[in-house]
Image (spheres, rainbow, N blue to C red):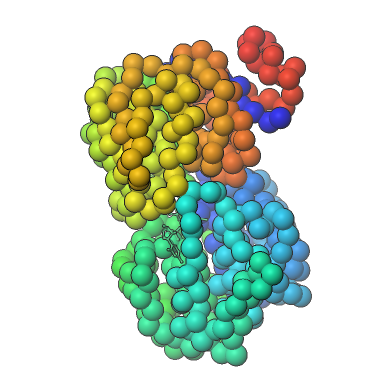
Length: 430
Ligand code: EPZ
């Protein structure tokens, strides 16, 4: 019984430090397998998904040395198998990054079919199409994806959908391939650029990351590197939204404001004040917020990973808001939970219509996936009274010290593991 026990109603005020980006760090760790030299990665978030990925790397012979909570040294010179299995890794989506990295280096990889948050079909046909274009054979056997090649040769690949995972996976598979690979209609997310920068820091020749077309000229081998992961756009956005929903004043530090423009723009539109500085952004919500329309889009559009956080905020904004989810088809499940807190929501296919209510009320709710879980915690912090959020393992996949950081801003949230702790939290006994 692991839950967050939350007393709501306090505006969140103060400063919070943002950690390294989960969705950059995961592929960067996998990409470190592409060299026999030692790689040092800094600003690694200390979250469950990262720790599961590191354990999977150890299980195939990678030497993983944790130098501190956020720093790790990796040496993959003595990998003894290219098959990655195990319960933990099967539950996470990012396991597919081992396919690109191991195929690129050893021309062979076999990984359990990827799991991850249940937010939609989450196909990997574009990854497979790209591997095949580079000359690999791909087959499914006993729940494993197996890919092998004699040689990998550069190719022209046009992605049918803009996919973060396929873009990164194909970059990793192509860096050591013979000749030029051109990938069109690629994802432009900051984490895609970060992985390309990391690979280039190891001696790869990748151009165009951050645009629609990436060109990769294959090199013979990659060397060691020391690299710092970019700040997490979505963790930052979540705390920006925490200021808005609780009518607070939060300065989010250690971020890249450019990556947050789509979120800042929406917050301004609904009535927040947003001030950028070099590596921080301050969100002040002192006025009445009003509703708006949001459509999730690949970067630089509004991120699907911020859709639940803005929806819970809009549920308290004056008037009608319309939220259209255009990336994943099953990302509104949390709205039923929000309904238990008093939200007025109608779902029509991939559109949520929110009629703003004056307040949420404390309730017992369940996290339905990572970002939805974080959004429901924000709703509980804004709500009147006491809430519990369970299935917090989802939240812990991607947020480091989430309760501690929220409490640092004046929130009242406690992680409880048994009935006695829950009782004490409800009575506000420390
Ligand atoms: C990554 O997932 C992130 N995960 C997700 O983060 C994020 O929501 C998503 O990108 C979009 O930004 C990781 O980085 C580990 P996609 P990914 O491939 O790579 C379709 C979080 O909360 N598609 O960009 O799985 C797919 O079904 C999470 O941190 C295909 O059709 O996303 C979806 O509709 C959850 N075929 C769309 O493309 C493919 O081969 C975008 O998916 C690949 C994708």
